Amino acid sequence: MNTNNTPCQRRLLTTAWAGMLAVLLAMLLIDPLKYLMRGQYEELSKTLQQDPGTLGLRVLMVMLCLNTLMQVGIQMFAGRRWRSWVLAITTLYGLFFLVHQGVHVAGGEALGLHTVLDVTHHLLALVPTGAAWRWQQESADVPRA
Image (tube, rainbow, N blue to C red; front, side, top):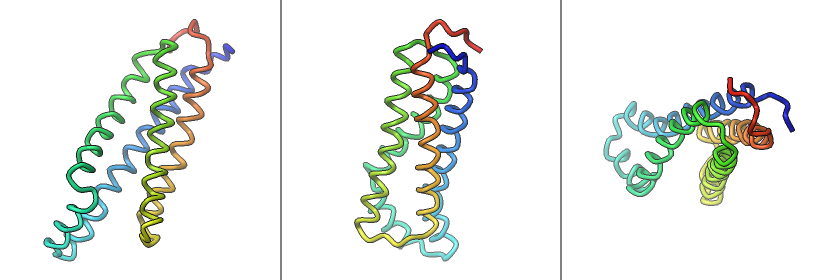
């Protein structure tokens, strides 16, 4: 399937990954800002120890780096293996956040601003997954833009 939509798929991929990065950063900042505005420093410390916790913070840092590197890699590389890798990572990245939100909802977390950010992230994850699938299906001989 050589539709020569490579530039369009790449733009969609990088734009959606950038959007997911912006939402992820907002998710990271919303609770600390809420506690800081109220002067609840001890409560903030306790909350951050629970979520994200030390391991969660490390995972988030890896995800931030992955997100940024994916945006650059999508623009730099176009080989068939790379496109398959982009499809797999994009799909797993989106699923990770869907499962993570499911855990929070199952744990009784109230709906709120986090829910809006989570749903936005899930919707954004659909766009690059579709674009990655279409890009992966294209012939490797499509000229780069």
